[in-house]
Length: 60
Image (cartoon, rainbow, N blue to C red):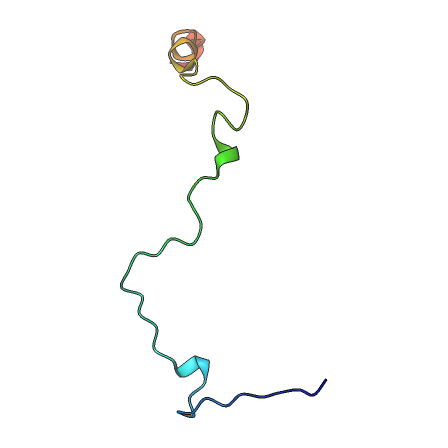
């Protein structure tokens, strides 16, 4: 199969192309679905209050 080269009609390469970065475009989410409490198999709500109440005295 022959190699086909396409020339840019303006003679500019990708390095010279103007790119508009003014919009907030999200490619990937900050957190995936499997990195949530549900994804880890945990119940919603958690036990943070209990853990804080049961802190050892030497942590204060």
